[in-house]
Length: 352
Image 1 (cartoon, rainbow, N blue to C red):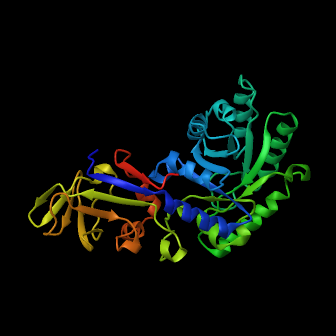
Image 2: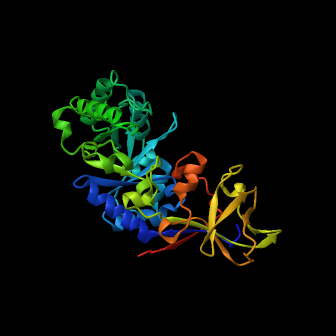
Image 3: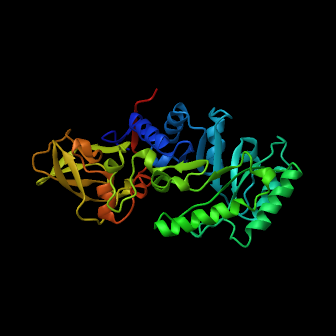
């Protein structure tokens, strides 16, 4: 990828966002959610920053990412949690690395036990039972929940798993729906034998719910988007929540075509195409963008090769924000940043 295109990653902004959320949700703890690459921000730097701020839980999308983080030196005092698995997943490496596993069914639990019981490491997998409280994003249905809990309890008695947590996803679509999900989750807790409840980490809320609803926080909240300064949309901006965007995407002008400047980034690099109304900023003013496959035209007759165009950045600098792009595209900010090519250089500032 051309050195004339880069994404600035401001870890000081990440720290500010994280501290804001930590204060807001206390005494609940924060799980920093990085999925596979910290929403395109770079997993190693984000995890190191979060751990430096006292975070003890990191959420990854699949177990292999967690195994890689542990192999890179992440200490065992930081608990890793993964929740997306293939039907034929071999859980041995995850158990050996101390990656805790979301489990949604008795069949999956049996798979976890069968694959880890033959492992040479002797590591006992730690599991978090998931109940579907209405969103339909995996999890045991309420009628299947007692059987899952009974199976985990039996395997824990046999020393083949450790029952470490219970969790769910909620829709965050309306207060009424979220209240129903919270009530269902609380009810599900009562199915857990009392002797198992001590030390069980309960987590339900992600960024938005954890910020707004104290009754959603339980022991732990999963914070992804808000850590990166990405707001949920729907008229809610990062600045209205006190958040600072962590990523700014910039490119240098390499040529001119008529009254437009050319920057060497386009849809092939993960930018949205065939969209009208997107703006960037250059020389302190807004400029219209026309995104092509490998290049983007910037409608400004005064820009010269070498000038810098910000595609999205920070509101306090007068730059278009990721939220503006998301609103124009009818999507959410996360969808834009996770699609940016890894070939785009990440220039990290604020590393401790």
